[in-house]
Length: 505
Image 1 (cartoon, one colour):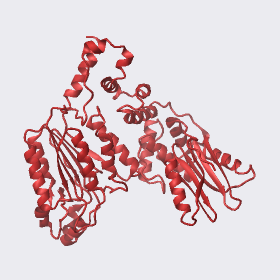
Image 2 (cartoon, one colour):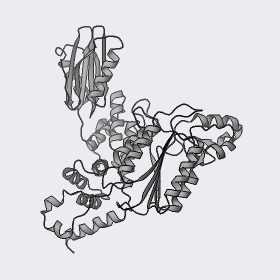
Image 3 (cartoon, helix red, strand yellow):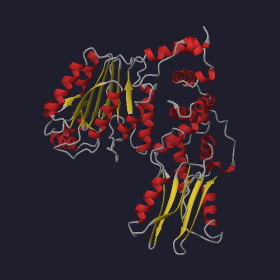
Image 4 (tube, helix red, strand yellow):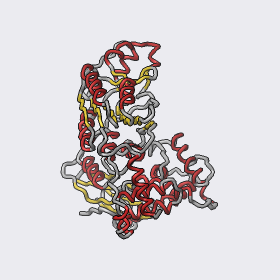
């Protein structure tokens, strides 16, 4: 069998195994409860439900919508959902709102829920197990998204009424083991609390909406991308979690149709490799490998491909694993105390897919655990210590990223900035040298590295200097802080660490 024919058969297998063909009957129930009567209003669930429902309809789902449902409405929509599921190939349930776990069982709360005693749960809440049983009875493939782990005042009220029995009430939702053919995804890990977010959507819903309509990405990799986006957005406070017993690949948006073998063979090979279906075959052939050159080859050919974000993470892991044994350097064991370098260590750990927890503050056990994990993969003694040797190895693994700095002298009204420097000290020295000469002190400074940017805003009697993730955010924050004390603030300096987006008067 020739190579092109083999690729064709591989692609047919990938699509058929997903159970997501256009002719499948797909049914979804999407519920968003925001306006609670006996608890504070949740800001995003209703928005999340509208946006998720719209996306699912574009993906071919028959969607039942439920917004701000009371007890009767919750029960009626779940009953209607059970009826629509009869004969369905795929069932999907999305819930945003308050939920509660009591004695290991999960309950979803309608907007009129009032929990005075434990028995109220049977009458004013919807048992999640009931929804799951109905889905698994009717459809062979089921997907459940639960953005219901928010801090819940109704749980506190119930705990007070239960007295010593309140230990049965726990934070967030309880872990559920799904039946065969089901994936259950939580906005955060079981027993933890998710965030409502500051934008139109919750962090979990925003990430989900970003990924589910991208063609050719199986749900397992959608959830990896969602997890990474939520971790980044919440600064590691929220970790989406899922449990899957799916028996095949599921695609919200299936891969593009495959051309007939004869037609494929008639085209030049360079044209074939640009097609989405062959991109998946390429990815499928390397995704379990440990050679960083394979992931670099994928990213070179498909820099904006469906698997590009995942490839970058796996590339970093492969690079760390491929580092040569560390050479002994005299200063490697010196402890790091500079706050900027401590932050750099944490950010580099995070970029290499080792979760350090908070980027600031005391070095806790989560950061030490991330350090030990990196050290083990990088062939270092896993001591969990913040040392210059650790930072050197992190820089080798992630390549040396540029530093930038902005400095300011408020009395003389002088400023300077620098970018694309190899160290923080070099960036500050360069910025001060541009602030009127080497003798100028310009004592106020902000430094930043990697993809971060800084900005300085000034007005007579007021100024602000900040660093943020993007130059737009830096300018906005600097102006906002400056205007608290002055009216005519303007940006007089802004730059990213790599020299991009430079602004001067």
